[in-house]
Image (cartoon, rainbow, N blue to C red):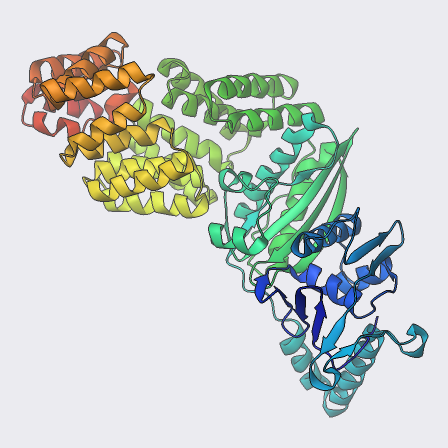
Amino acid sequence: MGNGVQSAHLYHFGAFTLDARTGELSDNGHRAPLRDQSVQLLLALLEHPGQLITREELARRLWGTETFVDFDRGLNKAVNHLREALTDSAEQPRFIETLPRKGYRFIAPVTCTGDDAEGVAQEAPPRSSRLPRWVWVSVMMAAGVGILVGAGIGEARKWVASRWAVPPRISALAVMPLENLSRDPEQQYFADGLTDALITDLVKIGSVRVTSRTSVTRYRGTKKSIAEIGRELSVDAVVEGTVTYSGSHVRVTAQLIQVSTDMHLWADQYERDVSEILDLQRVVANDIARRINVFVKPLDRVPRVNPEAYGLYLKGRYAFYEYTSRGWQQAIEHFNRAIETDPAFALAYSALADTYLVAGAYASVPTEEALTRGKTAAAKALALDEGLASAHYALATAHTWYDWDWVGAEREFRRGLELNPNDALGRNWYGGYLSLLGRHDRAIAEHERAQQLDPLSLIVNANLTRALYWARRYDEAIAQARRTLELDPSFGITLFWLDGALRHKGLFKEAVALRQSVASDAEQAANIARTFERSGFRALLRECGETYTKGGLLETAARCYAQMDERDTAIELLEDCSRRRCSDLVSLNVEPDFDGLRDDPRFQALAKTVGP
């Protein structure tokens, strides 16, 4: 396709102006953001107003002939984005008319200005009178390279390489939730599971930072631009794609988009039998890593997988990420069924270990059950595949919070970090381990690294608050807690650590207001306010101590009594907690609430039992 007026660089139509040189679209002087594909689409239509531009011509214009892309989806997406920017409609078009199964036509008057075309209404010349622009470009490139070859083949290669083979500079990447094209909402778990798996494989094979699943899931179905997503996640490139799962076959398309230019750098499609799904994931991850020019670590060829077991595994991961008691119970059921279907499926054991340990930490599963079954599942996963970083992290966490085996935890964390240093959840757990050892600066650094990998994860952000609180950096803990609550104002773990930081800063009115905000009803909130006004914060601590004791949360109850300086009651509760092997006792040596008990020999004896 050639330009209607070669010298024009400003196209005016309606209230809009498009600058062909910069790709900027303005509406009455206000900039309207457009993606690169939509800019090229609009230019193709404006260069030939009133003429049909076929879908095939647009494919060459937008993506060239050497790059595969999911053309129908890509073109439809570019057209929809363009119509949205122009406030146009497919049903009642003002600018872009659709000719079904043929292409598109620009139907509004167009005026061109700039250079020699000032104020001239654009009329496209007969299309047969000129060769398409891509032909001329190809001829000129060939001529230029021919001249250079005449001067020396080696120099020609250097020139071409320097001008056309410069790799993109990408150090951080986000994989958007793959779109489920199966037309079955029940298959959403499969698309989400493949997204998670692709992220995991990219982390394993490349040196690039890859945003974790929790953060990217929030962008499913988003209308935000690539630039906005890239800015919010602090990444240089984004992977978009689709999944079609039908019968025994899986088809995946993927495309890599550079944030700074909104350009498609690469695209491809893959199709496999579902039993080869692990190999498909590996191939896609390798192709992306090579395209962004990172050092690729070799991965062993993966075995075929039982399709039924893999489907159950993906359903389990889908339920796990609900981060609810119900979701964890469902995840445990799915993982156990996957293991029954394929007893040698290491990933299912590792995921089962993760679920037990996380559910145990949230009191959704009894502590002893979480410890025993979580450790057993992690050990079995490692017996089947010693290279599973997630299983090492899970085992290390069990050693830390349940066994108080600090040497074993250190060993497993080191192995997990060696295998996968960019696992956000693993880094998060490792940060907790360092906090419990009193290595607060290193712990905070680990949590901040986890936050970089998964910036929108509630648990990662909440645990950074905890690390700052345990380090007695209360102002920073309060600020971090408030940032986390912007993601979810009702996230209980964040509220718990925020309450502690406010108390230790002496901000009792703010702590009371916080407790009122999470009260179960208006009457309870009013009672909190009345108790504080009449008897002060100490009375609220006593109420909390009594409530937590009745509820069996002995370590939390002991905190309340320790804050009231009721030593005997606090230590008796902690001793009872020790006999019951409460996992919360692991924080005895770092919890600020117990600072007033540290000179008591009974407390010192308890602290020695926990270690390190």
